[in-house]
Length: 385
Image 1 (cartoon, rainbow, N blue to C red):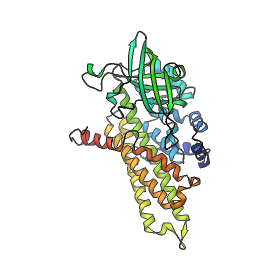
Image 2: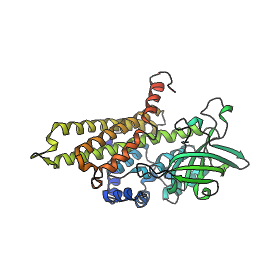
Image 3: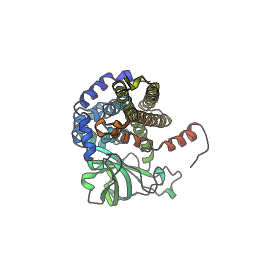
């Protein structure tokens, strides 16, 4: 299993880039509810967002473990990898299950930044995390599929050229297992907007560009089917396990950011003629948060090692995500409490990062669903839903 020390070159490279985008940059983007286009473009130009694309297609061909370090460092440096992390995990579905023609057509252009594949459309308003009951359909008609339905909480779609879509191609009543009969498609957003595809923004607590997506007889070329028809759910799991490991890494980066800021402030802030960090009531919560982040980081590397070895990693990816989300949230609370009233002031950036890291208790996949998964699939307890 890899350790944190194996990626010094990656860490130093990402940190050097992030120094060009200090706290003030992300604070301004957050205040404007904007998108960090310059930051994402810089990451793309430096090759960091092409980390998981094989070298033969213009990428770096790095491991998921290395990619997770990239995401971790972005958040540890004060940024928000949520603006671009979709390209990392969505990419793996295409890399692992796309046809040779699809990979040669899309991957080099994604690696160069000519195209962006930032969005994945799975969740629906009436089914939530019960993915096998999704209602969006794709019906084959000649050389095209006609898509109808609705998706919700679809991130970065307004800053992407391509969308990975999961739709049902065989009615659930006609399959033996409800996870069968779903397929994955690459949707070219440039050709689809206004031609059967419409978007509606969802204002939310954090500056996370999120939308409802409506499909009304949208035609998708049959050549855009990724992998085999009806096998989309299995293909999607490759992307979801990668997503959970990468999100865990982002939470770990957040956790370290909170701990570093809390430690610095506790050393500098003097009350009653002594730094507040001398008090055990301030020290111990920071130390405990650090221990939890370190432990979560180890589970992240275990999940990545299994994924990179193409071994089953569903339990580990889920556990890494739960542990990291919990650790980052505890670190966020400790950091805010350490700063006191100043933690609520925008200029300290604690409140911005506080809002951002809270998301990961809920999505992608809530902590309750992870506990249900571990209870059933690891411990052998009865299915709870």
